[in-house]
Image: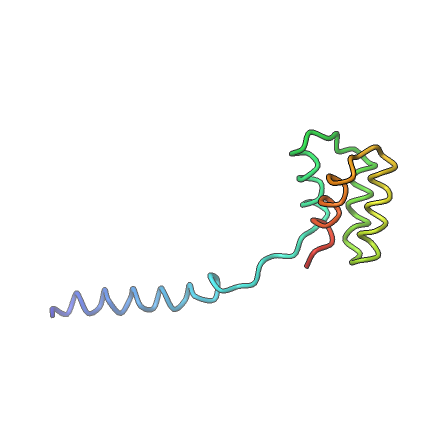
Length: 91
């Protein structure tokens, strides 16, 4: 095996080892932005009411329930509100 091939092989192995932590990282936490994007993708107008509900949803289980209640008050369908608030609250 030539010296150049060994160097390339070692460089490739080093690059893979450096990339492994990035590939194995845990998924990002959901945010109010995920909730807002979900609503936007369903065709809802994402104004201050939806943004406020999504912000509230980031507060864990209790926040998720408050988010859901606000979404229902805004006229959002039950299933849409449930999923949007889940998107804001999930870890």
